[in-house]
Image (cartoon, rainbow, N blue to C red; front, side, top):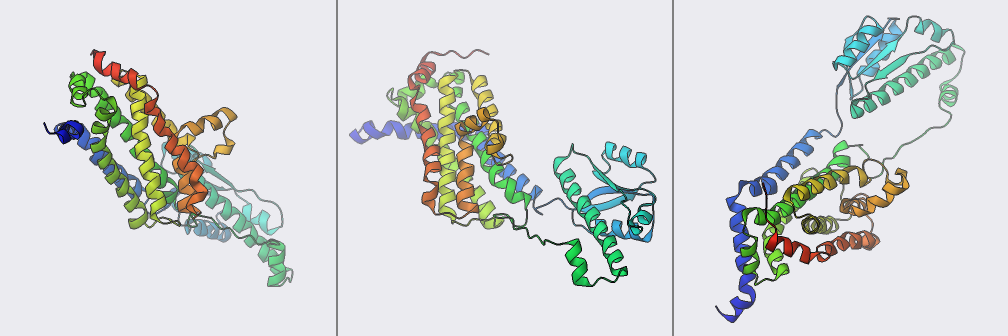
Length: 393
């Protein structure tokens, strides 16, 4: 063996050995390539239109006048709403919603038009199935808007009949005109809202699981001592040789979702690609570090995988992208800072959505990088496990 091989050859042999292990076990190919690509395709195409369109709803029009029919035609004209059936009574519509035939229904009782034209206060009702959160929320918004528009239309006709001009009518019906500007996602595209976190979160979970499997499978297969011998007993060299080939694959998969989101789908990326590329790279490396940390704490493959899965799943809600972190109870608010995905999300908001200069996010980059110290906490515990732990079925 040459001096160069004696110094660096062991690392290269470990890398070669790990590549051979990855190619010999289909689970690596599936979890590192196939599963991420399926996830990217599924989530981005599932919400390819941005919002659900033509959600099926029903109506109960007991008044059945020209005005109520016009109200229902206007409701059906909304993009998110498709009136699929008119029911004879409230009970039939409720049963249809309970069966899942419709997600909501609009109820107009008899006498509504007469009460409205006589300047009284008629009541219309709309019911949504909150078991389906997104379609129920969208239909509630459309039906509420339609009720307000119908009320305004009837009031407008009454004011016209009394001799009011257009300017006077609008001043009474809408004394304050409001404008809404959605920052970062003006089209209220659900894919922009969800995909930017679901894709990296899914990749993070897979990275932790594959890292744990790669390390603990050495114990399971009885090859952990041979692995360490190739590194001349140097634990960190053995770990680097094992994780380096995986890191190369994960970087490619991370770059793939960045291309999918910001090049193919043209999602907002106000600060350019490099801040998010660094964010993605840090999340990948930190996910590997977290997987190693769990291996140090838990010598059992089953337990380590279970905790990694639990931690990854909890990252979705606690990162603050679906429910505001400031609204968490104080203990959960403090706990959220222990999840790497929280910092990835904060960087994404600063860089991709708000377009802040990169130095404004230095604290979040530093916090994400700090997770890299985790494998340095209990290395001897993992090394002892690799040398002494006996896998039991």
